[in-house]
Length: 422
Image (cartoon, rainbow, N blue to C red; front, side, top):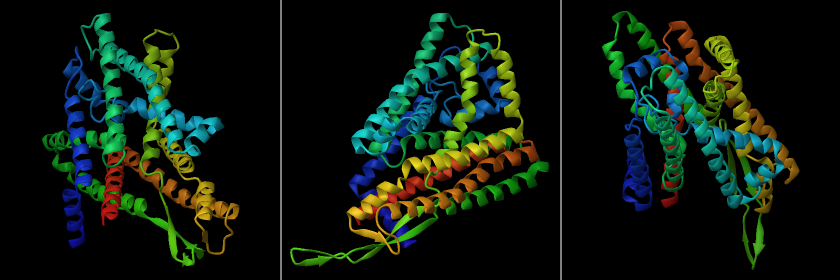
């Protein structure tokens, strides 16, 4: 406990760390203010009814940081930017040039790669904004708008999404943690008071055992997520002795920490984005009155309404994206080269290709355990929903996963900042 209070004291007394924390808080205040500004022409009564029976919009509201529920100018949230990032990550598999830019060209290459993601965000935001506003207008949620006013609404929500992307990038650069994840986290936390008050007003004493059981399960899931996120496999490394200018140094031992779940919450966000993408596309196409779109929309909705198929697709996507994101962010060849360049080696393993092969095999085994765990935890709330019939449990389970992972990431980064000052 004393160590904890010392760290808190350092966070608020060290100007560099304190400024980063305050910058994050200021950015979140701006975001929440933007989320309260609605676009013109919204019928709130119809909107609430439309949201009550639509799991698709409930999941999408997570990515908008709660902005979609209010039909605010940031209703698209960081969804277009996340979709653009997924497309760019997938392109690295098909394009060696993009892969080299992302992994081999250093900071300059990653900056160019990120810039391409930003540029791709704009057309995706336009498509998503047009599609959603067309869908909501056809459902009577948005009423009384002329063509010009509809176009103005599209421009507003696209500008709001781009502004939110910019705020997220500023938080990543000048704050603590990943800005996009923090925005999603803030939106989820902001909906907690309304959710709690709704449960209080609609509370049925007969459901008390159900809610108590769900609370215990939620605590267990939080504990499991924390444990698996923090779990790591230390790889012992030894630095060879070197003599320079008559001075001998090296010969020390250290370890290379390989996390069991290196991808964090990113696979869940990616998987949800892919599951929501077909409906986003169909919402856009519905505005053009194509004859096959209503049937395609009906088929997609039937497939997603099937909890077994939806859960299986969700599990497989989380599993695959865990491997994919780990492969993108952790390169065994690069790590092996860095170890060899610094005169370090893993005991019993030859430097160079053998070290890269050893790290690659070890990472694959660790990622397999992490991917299975993440997939099971991701679909577990769907099982709870099937057993209890409460749709909010599925959405709430996804929100719990995101919140816990983001909090752990922020704590880890703050610890790193404090350790640097100490």
